[in-house]
Length: 463
Ligand SMILES: *Cc1c(COP(=O)(O)O)cnc(C)c1O
Figure 1 (cartoon, helix red, strand yellow):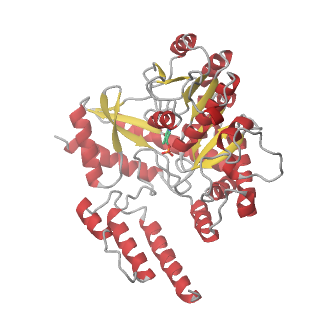
Figure 2 (cartoon, rainbow, N blue to C red; figure 1 turned 60 degrees about the vertical axis):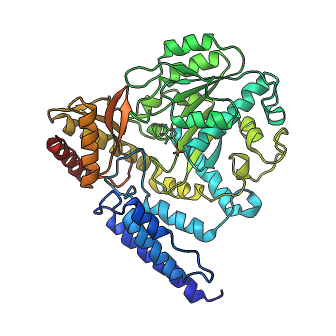
């Protein structure tokens, strides 16, 4: 146990393997090479009576990873919306594991508590949200959406004279949930967790880019009486389009409703002077959800929930007597802002990354990724038979081939098989499309050029 040298040897081995992997990222094939059966067989080693030497376990894991990882942290992965890890973020994350703090309460880690407090201030400053807002660091944007909607549920029901934390929803006034027809799927999950149900949510029609139509919202709101929560989107997961947030905020607040904004990646546009106009008015919302593990490029996992009404945030999440106003004290206990009690110090890599990048660095990251997205669209549009389906306002590009679902799906398969880059498919307004998301800090113009060449070659070889 106390054999320091043997313990450190395992860490040295892991460090060496990590360095080799990271060096391989820019050049390695993006997709996995092992089949499901091979990978399962590699993982399903018998659990032995005596255990296995630590260095052998680490070596085996690395070997399996070589066959089964997706190089999604690398520069030519454009699938879903997935970021990589800045070196400063990864280094801080390694230390988080070494320090092994429980940042849930101040008493278990004064260090993690004050770093998290500072990280929360950085986020509010960068995204230009109201100063009094409280912040929680969740596993991802799904849980950030859940937490924000829990605070919303608390406040709209409290305004109607109902204490949902103590009474639950038994006999409660009905809560109207109004959202865009293009709402991200995780909102449905959050509504399920909150007992608000999915079926009763009112869907507001969207335009060709997936933006909520405000006249439709106005009609819907006129049909809602009583407690109401409106959900808007900063960054549609397909097109990158933004709901007209300033108009939505005016309509929502005229009704005394709560406005929540899901800006998993799009909210970061506010850090760039060039793109901030897209999320104009977002500061008028009551709550926001975003991710750090997507566009900010910290390692998984880290989402961020921000709530303008501290008391609603704390009363719905605090572990101690949720129905009481929290006793004033100087220390910040992180568990008051997230669903978890014990958890990882995931705000520490956020702190490290934001301090390292500064305002200019975050703006550069956003602007560079958006410029790469425009480069993708401009180059691909030159090829006869390739069509760009969306207005490329952010980092997302939708591409269709020969105006046919079959050809589009075939090109996606061919590109994935080629391995130069990786991107996935989606369905946009009934049509199959290839979706490109540029979210990685390390992607260069050369990566985009190599990727467009691979896509065009796949298109030309498609039947
Ligand atoms: C990715 C995403 C989510 C979910 O975030 P996770 O971090 O995967 O939980 C929610 N909303 C939008 C718009 C997203 O893009």
